[in-house]
Amino acid sequence: MALKDLLVHLDGSEQSRHRLDFALALASAHGAHLTGLYILDLVPALGAIAHSYPGRVDQLKSFTKIREAELDKAKQVETLFRDLLKRNGIDGEWRFLESLPSETIALHARYADLTILGQIDPQNPPPVNASRIPEEVLFASGRPVLIVPYIARDKSPGENVLVAWKPTREAARAIADALPLLEKARKVTVLTVNPERGVDAEPGMPTADIALHLTRHGVRVEAATTVANAIATGDVLLNYVSDTGADLLVMGGYGHSRAREFVLGGVTRQLLQQMTVPVLMAH
Image (cartoon, rainbow, N blue to C red; front, side, top):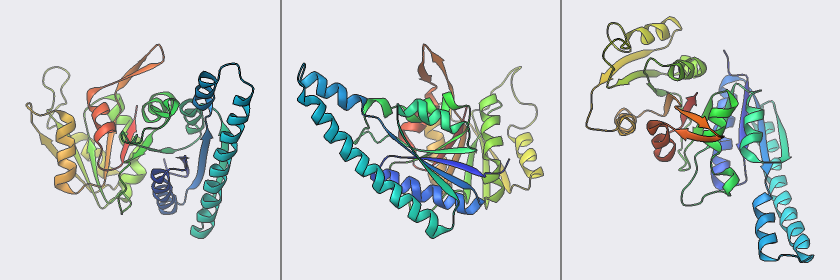
């Protein structure tokens, strides 16, 4: 699969601008069409106004002023987006909707090869309806997501990629979805942390078969295995990213849905909270 259709979620924040630059670089490198998706969700604001001024007509005026200000901000982002598309010679389109963010992004993500999202900044959390966008889009869209850290980095990722491997459906899906990036990378390391033993264990050396598969696709790959039973797997991956200078992490996203409340696996949750480089996840 080639990356020919990219979707980036924009919201007018400083992190959103970094996300846009990242998406533009990715679209340029792969000759991809880039869609900018901006969602205006005023349900929390309307609820807060109604709670503060119950039964008063002027709450509608307050809501109208808030909406007008938000529409102006969205228009500014649209102007920037279109200008950068033109300046970089990238084919793309702008989409603006007034809706619930997670559900809407998940829907539009189904028509893209890859969706670029932002990590939630705990110091500047978004409104409640947007606070779980990364995990909800990951589990609901059926498509891979690439999550950009809220702390901006200067370079675009993909030169030195770390792949977290275990013989599961999610990890296999992530590698397949990331293949266009892996094929272009200067270096790819496939790492297994604490390989399983017993009847479900991989035959032979862990990571050897998946590394051979990637080699057949022309990927410049190294295989690595580490045992660190006293350290959380998420910490091992973060340390490995730091030690090797990796600029992209590829991994399966683990969890399940119960009554529409997504429950994350421990490693997935930790990486979403503590990532230091962009992370491509698939479920």
